[in-house]
Image (cartoon, rainbow, N blue to C red; front, top):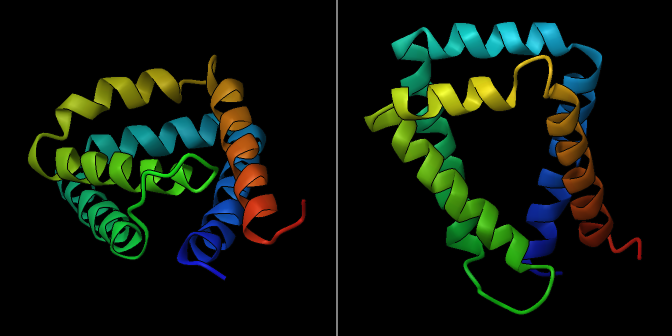
Length: 128
């Protein structure tokens, strides 16, 4: 089993559950985003956590391959970028996050999270 499989086994269920949460509680999730983005300390803390976890992903898997495992690398690099921006200039992401996670577009975001969660779980656990 490769590092990519183990990371997919962790991220797959996390994205799947996040997608369900977005579907079940769109207004609560939007309120949560507002509260975090309005609090500089929380934005910094989430940036720190995101950056640390993303760098861990890249430490174990940073391969630009021509198969499904490149998704893990892309997630790692996007998370690294997001964590860095949240720590240095959180206002850059506030508008984008509020747009993507507003109640009107929440179902699209939820569908994306669910699809990514299913994909990573299937690949990580070798279901197909």
